[in-house]
Length: 468
Image (cartoon, rainbow, N blue to C red):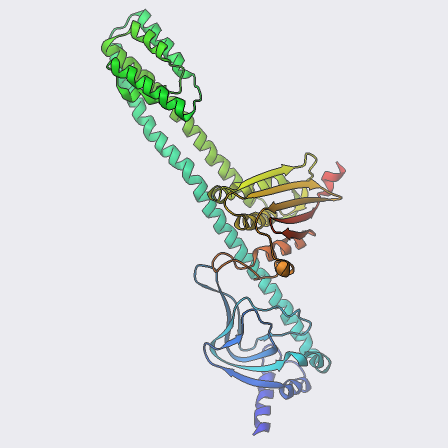
């Protein structure tokens, strides 16, 4: 019976997609040292956070590693019949971020991890295949991580942009509605003034009042309320619409100026004149508000274009670190205001350009700044500094949050390691930061104590900038 099972395993190994081409003597070693294990649907193959204790040669089934990012379960890796998984030769022995679960009935030849050194000597072809599989798996994980992180960054970007655009867009809509009403009121008042057949002196008095209305004065809330009450009382005494008070409050139209106007123009003509003045003032105010809001939207779109490097090829070149960090902070503006976080930025006057892919570098700033915002309490502080070094650019992002416990500081750059709750983070952000900086020949380090955590990024400086 044992011989039959052994021969069956040898046949199955010969047909295995990954290991089928290995010599028969190596297949025999695997059979002699392995244990055939069967798993039902729902069985946990490897427990979250624990290192895999066996090499798995998968004959049949479907094993899946899933994560919940706050929007339902998300598959991040899978193994099927013909794959190999679990502990690998020369692997650092990373632990999975969640349970590896059988989603179909599975049969696996399991070789204990402690036997891997012996297997390396006895099975060189199998070992070479497994090392290649491990490299491919790492590459697939990296590609998946980068893709997921880009989607997360895109989601943050879209959410932040929508929030940022909402206020100026609402202001434009509100001001446009007021503008239409004010123009209509101004036209009606102008027709009434024309019908009054005013003298040149009366028209001159109205023109002087108009000039006073074109000036602006800034008042405190208390002073503004007192002034509005005084103008409202004056309007009531002269049978003029009290609705005209608010537009005139922060103008140069004083009570004395109103008395001077009333001395020249009386009755219905005075009412028409003040309504025309108030409507004109309101038109100018809302026109300014529309211009300000439109400028804000323009700046936001420009920041998005700068952040994403739209219409530019993803190639390395000179990158202005100032612009990248500024655009990133603009994207995170809503989150900063929601937590009342104070962000100070200090760029050295002699800061040189970094040599990098701009869009990828902005992803680094997004992850580090977003993490800092998550770390600080409401009303917290974040300090960003950038300065030139020896053939490099150094950027520091420090926050006054609670700090990172000493016992986990050496793990924060590991993939899938996170201290955030479900849906708040998957533990990819700092791993992506590290990987992106490695691709740019840069590096990131952290120093943390309670009340201060500082991430320092070093990037190669653009050589042309240094020599110019």
